[in-house]
Image (tube, rainbow, N blue to C red; front, top):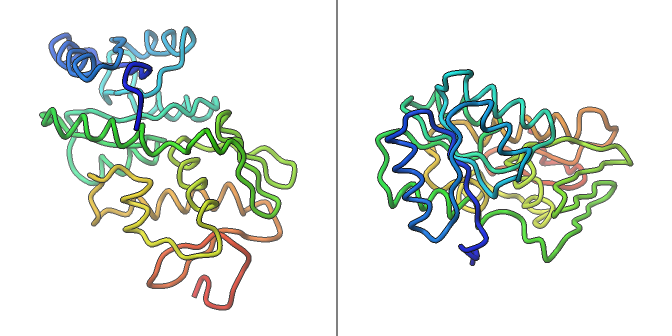
Length: 235
């Protein structure tokens, strides 16, 4: 269970009324809210103190929230990002996930649903009580959110890190898309979209592409497996 008093949520929203609603919602859960109204303010806030989660709008006065999230990921900032936006539809959700986002909620939102999204993202972070995860030449430092394969650092988004950690914890067995959706993803992710496949593709590209031995395999009709190659993989 997440200790609410320790949770800090950065609200990045330029509309004062929406920012106030989100801030009151966060504070009402016993969490601590901070507000940034521009991309520049958000960058300064992260430099001051990295929050536990960011609620990020897409349309901001000085930038696109997806570009901001992508820049954070490129800089190694792995804080979970939940997009809260007036944009709707599966294409917009996929674009948000491809930018490194960890969840997507369209406005107008239901308060209880948004809180459930936030709790899910906080709850599904890998447990820091098991700080090191390893498989073959793959090493994960959970608290530091660092990944090394064969001595080479691998930069991942927070969502990619969560997925990889889950697959390492369940190595040598198949995990289905549905299992990933429930155990790693935000449960509200539309099951008809291909966001899981997109993230697995991105993770595989980073983890396997530059190495001789692939670790992430597709098991046709079933899901994905982290382990050494087997005959039924990638058919």
